[in-house]
Every structure is written in C-alpha cells, then in structure tokens.
Length: 204
Image (tube, rainbow, N blue to C red):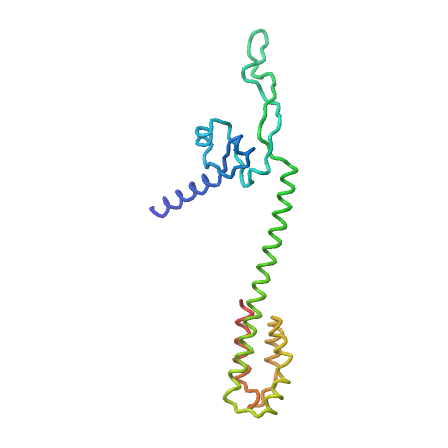
C-alpha cells in the first residue's frame, strides 16, 4: 500500500512539475523563471499566465487576438443570447517563425550530440582494441622468441593489428580465429584469449 501511495504521489508530482506557467510580461522579457501552477503564477504576477509546455518562452510573441468581450453580451429582445461582441486584446501566442528556427536548432544540436556519442563509443572500442594488442604482447613475453620469430609473428598479426586499431572488431575476431596455431609462435591458448578479449570490445 505504501509503495502504491508513493508511486501515485510521484506521478502527480511529475505531472505538476511538467507544467511551465509564465506571466505575460516575463515572457516578453525573455525570463526563464516559471511556475508549476497557474494560480500561483497569476497570484504572484497579477497578470495572465500561459502554459509554455515544453517550449522556451523565447519562441512566444505578443499578438493582437480577437476575443469575446464578456462585458458586452449580445441581446435579443433584451435577453442575452449567450454570445458576446468581440474585442481585440494583446495575448501571448506561439510564434511559428521562432518555433521553426528553434526546432531547426534543436535538430542540429541533437545531431551533434548523436555524433559525439558515436565518437565516444568508437574511441572506447579503439582503446579496447589496444588492450587486445597489449594482451598479445603480454602472451608473447614468456615464449622467449628469437628476433626472426618475432618478425614472423608480426607479419601474421599485422593485418589483425590494423583491424583492432580501427575498431573493426568483428572482422578482427574472425581473423584471430582463422590464424593457424603452430604451438609455438601462435598457440590455441593465444587464439582463445585474444578472441575472448576482442569479444569484450565488441560488446561495449
């Protein structure tokens, strides 16, 4: 029961805080201060307040709008008809031109964020690929290879090293598993360990 009440309270809290009420003059002034409740906004400002929703106040403008004049009801034979004469008053409205510019900027920023996120993932994978190369070096230390054998091994692993350095990890793993183990320069243990380490990079 306590859990249910907590979730219910959280829901109403989030719903209320999602509102973005701001009064007329502060919208025109470009103020970022807003209220979560309309009545609070109007009591404090003594002005009409508008729900900006998820938009910033900067994309709203003042415009002359035709509205009902509640002080001038239309009568028929002296009886109110339920309709009113019209008047014009200045109100805050969503400016379509500003909205279009804002949406375009949001799209540009979203694309930049997506690009940066992709770059960060790529950098992590490249760094992880370096760990696989380092693991190869580590596994070769106890083998006591001669300079000629080291050169031979480097020839075998050069394409794989290039793949790891460019984060071509799936291809690198396949290439590692395709290498023929001779039991000395390259062992089955080398292949299994390097393949497993490469898989960790793939899974990032």
